[in-house]
Image 1 (cartoon, helix red, strand yellow):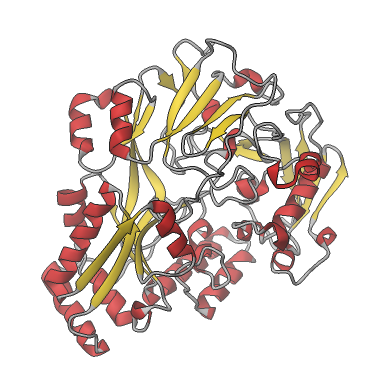
Image 2 (cartoon, rainbow, N blue to C red):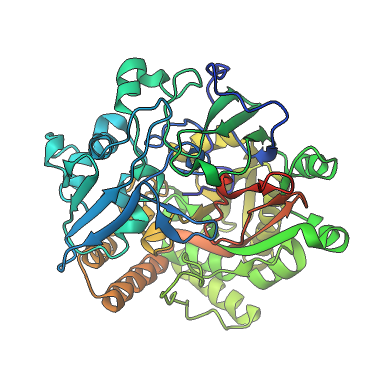
Amino acid sequence: MSAFIRLIFVSVGLLTCFVISDGQAAPPGGSIVRLPMRADPSSLDPHKIPNDYLVLNLFEGLTTMSATDEIVPGMAERWETSADGLVWTFHLRDADWSDGRPVTADDFVYSFRRVLDPATASPYVTALAPIVHADDISSGREKDLTKLGVEAPDPHTLRFTLRHPTPWFPTLMAIQTSMPVPRHAIDKWGDHWTSAEHIVVNGPFTLKQWVPLGELDFVRNPYFHDAASVKVDEVDHILADDPAAALKRYEAGELDEALIVGQDLARILRERPAELLSSPELSSIMVGINMKGPLGGDVRIREALSMTIDRDTLENKVIRLGQIPAYGLIPPSMPGYTPPRPDWIDLPMAERIARAKKLMAEAGAPTPLKVHLLSSNADSNKLYLDTIAAMWRSALGVETEIETGEERVLDDRVIHRDFEAALGNWGADYPDPTAFLEIFQSSAIFNFGNYANPKYDALLDQAGVTADPGERMMLLENAEALMLADQPIIPINFAVSHILVSPRLHGIEPAPLERHPDRYLWLEDSRG
């Protein structure tokens, strides 16, 4: 899962510097990849974070993602489902934790119970809702964790019982919520089990050191079941929260990758076109509305604000990053999905503005309407904010108060619902519409805009028990259309990523989920 454009879900790192335990250092002179890191993670416990970006280095689920976001075997060599689609059986490969202990099916049973236990406070348990009693346990209605529909008939076999057929279930087994954690290390070290001197992992790398507000360094895990395929000795993720500064470090040869934002794209296309990798993301940029705030009272006001944003002008003349104008939540690249469209999408701007003014008048909106818009202080965000505010002022006389600041401070504001409107982004963890739609369920942890519509919840529940893929997609499309009619968000555009990749670095492929796992990287002199 992604977040509001470096506004939501970017948390303060730990305050202690962790150093690597004996015997785990990368070989002297070994191959080292240096990548920018936009912010410290809040944790390296895969069950306690909303994003699997870095924990992909440390942990692997039953399945995993290829370099191009395809589901491939992970800790499970193979799997099958019953004729009715209600029982999934995964067959584990021989594999060890980084301390040499075998990874068993019991480790997965423990991990699924742990992640769903309310005491863990995992932020992303909704993805596991298809498992029998998962919702009951995560909500606290069921106290007996052993009733979860997960069992281990033997050390190499894991069996799930589902509430309804879930053809995409193997995809869910690749996300951080489904990753195993080492019970023996957690029992021994408690909350400190993820420090470098204690951490036990099953992924391609282990932790060398964590320097808060500095860097996270990973070294190859010799116990990983596919260690021979990992071609770099070390990957250092160096804090670079200023994209402009990171770009300068890339051009100076200090980083092997850089994210391109703002007005740098045109120059890069001229000067370094061979190093640029651009690809559409399953990611949506939007203005989120707090439905319990001043803008939550009348949908006509929110619709008027949406109608008067000229997305084509915003992208083609201001942002100029190749983004796709958005009028809904789910990107058009979502497989098998037809996004809904508002009825005003093809109207000339003059007609849209006239219609918006009428809506404002019918709603009895104050004159002038005042909007408080929150975002981080990144340069790219400033372009969005200033342009949107100018469009609202020109079309409707809206007075927009823009508040920007440090990401971590604003992150806390949004998490605690202390905002009126916020510029944000949401990216999918897996290629299914529910990765977007579930965040607007009334009970969702990530529903920071306080959206609540029982009909919307019912449509998602119905889709969850519908086996026919076509009928299921229709229900999800209807759910998105209903949510968009309520306008808890103002869609802006669908993201297209642009990254510079050093000529010496290989293994980064175009991928809609934008994970680019470090395990697939290799250097010119390290392929072997």
